[in-house]
Length: 183
Image (tube, rainbow, N blue to C red; front, side, top):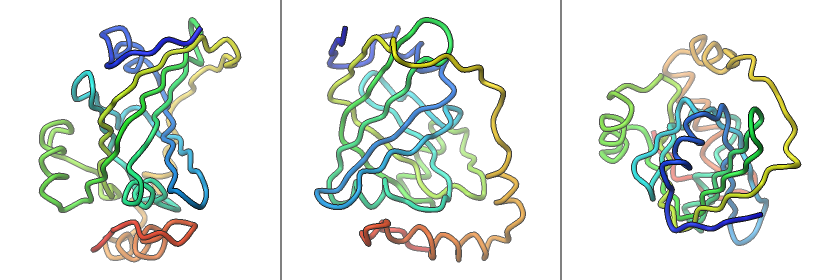
């Protein structure tokens, strides 16, 4: 039922491009394991062994803290519509904060050079294993649309308020690990 691959095939990439949500999982050697849902409109396939996603300011920043300590990460998506399937991407992650040269290069190369005001970083996963499994236990859901709440929330804040929020909520993980964010 589960198959392993060294890189993403065209079929894997096609499957990823049709999904509406993915989950990013990370963990430090101690503390809590984090799994975060992400919208696929920010997800980019760079090549068969590298993906990235544009990450927004949120209530925490576990991924940045975890990958500074132990850069392993898993990205998982599954089919909530159509034939059942689960796809996992395992590898080594890096985070690039807004304003860094790496962020700007990734933004220019994969996001038309523009980021929303509430962007905080781009997360890159260098893939060393791709795994597919049946997904028979995944329920069927219909996608009704994206929630506008995060964009509305950010639009209601000034630039200074967004910086203050990021300093308060995104500088340490819930376990007290530094995320590396500077403003």
